[in-house]
Image 1 (tube, rainbow, N blue to C red):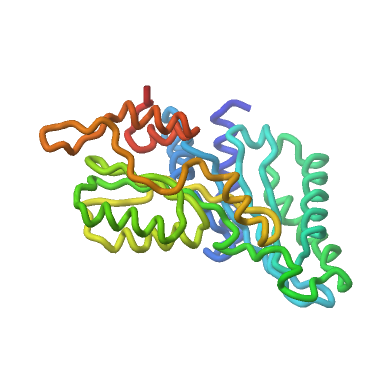
Image 2 (image 1 turned 135 degrees about the vertical axis):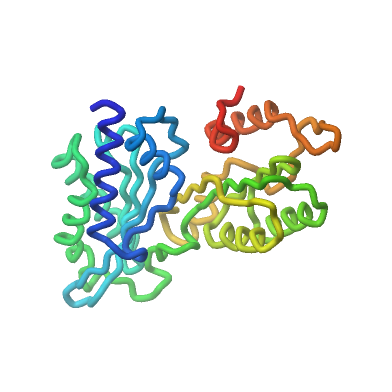
Length: 295
């Protein structure tokens, strides 16, 4: 497949999935910027520089014998060359203990490897889950308490990184609020004041979204989430802090200044910002913010 053929296959499958799982609760795209870039590439034949993988979640309610209705969440991500490369898929349920959940995912991956090589396969994966999930919900293995269960696929077991763009950040009180709220919510990341303003926060999805809720209530000329990353944290609740540490790219939240200049002292050296992002493994974000490749 060429790059365009792969992109067309991805977009076609996403449209099919959205029709098969029509409600917002069933089908959740977690990176709308990546989807918009993919659609623009396919429909307008533009040059394609992807900012991130397409990520989405399919929430399925299944009737399990002797257990009633159970919720399963299927976390999916497309590698850039999918379907030539297999998708990233993780199935989670609050009612499966860790051992069962691991076995379900292992068996699903084996099925996909043997049956769907080189073809789109998310719908096939959901059908396999519907047909086989009951075997992992045997009565003997259901957890006797919430503490024995795998963590619920909620905002408290998803690692999120928000890249926020503002037309400018000058006001001293806003800068103080940004720092204070990020520290209060135990977030990592940084803010770059000036024109434009850049904010990156990372941590639990619930706390990142609380930060965004507070920030957007302030008065801004323009502010938006330019990009977001959502990564499921696999394991028991006790493993979540370790999972966050592994995903973090930045130290505890701080304000960063890069060779302040300009007649009003309100511009930063974007070359230094690029070097900083590059050192943190986030160089691709620079083009998402400014529309040009950094150097």
